[in-house]
Length: 131
Image (cartoon, one colour):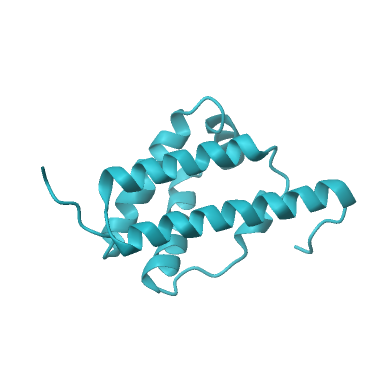
């Protein structure tokens, strides 16, 4: 059995993002939401995701922005986040093993929790964040 390496470079991040979003795009629950939002701008979206995860995991400092604001108006709920996390964890487990891979899972879970919490608050109160 081949030993898996940890996430160590931007090439690793790109591989993770590309394979993960390939799964997302084919999924019947979350794929249509991504397709409706991103449309034919997948190259741009993937480039943003490379920079986001590179900044989060490798301290590349190439992503600047507020990811939550891009998700405020999406029709997503707990099941959507669960599916997203399933594919993210699955892809990480297939490709990598080590502290950075575990950190990626942890950060993705925390991000999903925070997004859900904020979306629930916005939906209950009607208070939208400043853009």
